[in-house]
Image (cartoon, rainbow, N blue to C red; front, side, top):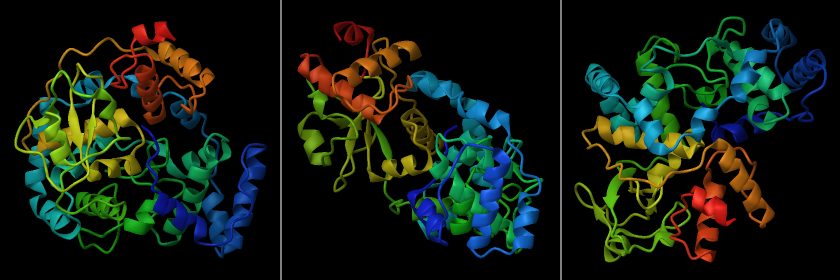
Length: 391
């Protein structure tokens, strides 16, 4: 799992009150002391601050989980088959029927199709069954103390403190995922503050125990992140063998008429006219092919992994009756060690691929596509052992 944090939520948390220096590392007890000072400077009562941080502890298991996300090195076909089963599809449709009125309200108020939230609900917590048992306050404090991504997690501590003051968070007992997400659809404290909804009318926002609260809050969050009401997000397509592969990828876009002129066809139904869209090939020109519409990009505000995002978006179409994608016969890709080698070689050639982490992210895909063009190879952004050998 990667951390889901919206830019809006982060900005909101950062601008809530004057910040002291964004420090990390060093003595954990001193770090907690600095957090307490900052909380008071933000206007929180010292008695509340003392109670909130009374049980603060560093959690080594959180750091271990943060460093162990090898699942995102899996290619799309393997990853999606691992996460999607007929049982999960059946359960999702059953939950859709069970909470039909709630999903109708979400679609009416926020324009988010039910399959989208059902897919998140399934992947994040198996429809609420597995929400995580990490102490949330300690997870956030541990990750803020760690110097890998403190700017993401430090604001969430103060959001959790605000939830505590509202009576919706217990620093000693509230649990969730290792990265600080809470509830059935796994939302961070700042997102809960901004988008939490009392969906069952009991006067509280409880994302851990109330499906209506969790689903409506998730729908509102997607809307706040830019979800476009009633528009599609993903559709499977077929491409001609002579397609210009250099036009694929999220860094290229066109209209339905442009793609149709190039021989792109929807595998079922028709392409949606009037929307900018991109052709994505998760495993190159010989694997599955999809067209991604503007709503697809909103997924990246929830999770930054391309493989996770595509799988969640595709699963949403399956939950709404879509067909199984055509897996094709993709060329063999790179394992984690080979991907790191490739990233290092691309970096040495002047490409910005970010950290050499063995994960095929957006920067690595763009670099691969560019070097493929320069080498006269089909520029489908799918790195293979043959490409690695040529470099």
